[in-house]
Image (cartoon, rainbow, N blue to C red; front, side, top):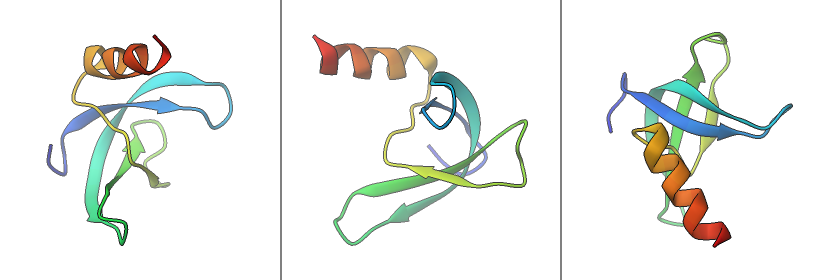
Length: 69
């Protein structure tokens, strides 16, 4: 994934939902994990960050299904 790509994220801020977003930047943080910053198409003036973004809705669903099995 690279900046400008569409990605899928689990948005648990207000009403939990799966949303499509645009990747803005990729940051390596001190704990050696990668943090992805993105904006939702409807909210381009705010940037959000997460450790978990996915290239497709299917990949996101598969990741969370494995966690809850």
